[in-house]
Length: 240
Image (cartoon, rainbow, N blue to C red; front, side, top):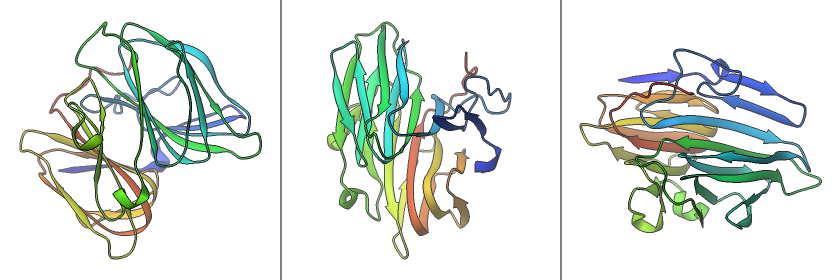
């Protein structure tokens, strides 16, 4: 069964320097029907103007990854990490027993557009860690490239949860499919463009809950960039 979450139904926070669409409940946006899905707690679609960003703030016991679509994002944290994330880069910060970080637009001239995604870990109080990897457009073109997994398979980043995340780029006749195990949930997020999922047209910002549906077929994309999540069949109690 596919349940579509239309982009226009997402929450919106606008702070002048930040425009953020919330797929699930976050901050001041509360929707009792959108409290995360399985271990996927947050998908924020953020646009930050030049030179601005999120000042240093703490997290604990959360797996947080950033996926840059346009521009460059500058990351600093209390682990001593300093990096710049650009399109194709994936950053994964495991907050563990506690870490503070900042995320700023690296450019003084251009905006940055990125997704920030939170996954609930399967262990608490672990040692914080930071990972970053580049996945080329060629690796994702017309296919689903594994970018996050529990065991770091295929050069993916290692997440502290039984979850897998795939990224793909699709245009025209390019097609790909993913077989979910029978006992798994899935979630599909269209980061940009439009695409068909099992014959259903999805547009930028749309999301789809997948239950009791093993074969996911993606195709007929128009400059589409897509994230696909393979998740436990588990419902979260909601955003704290």
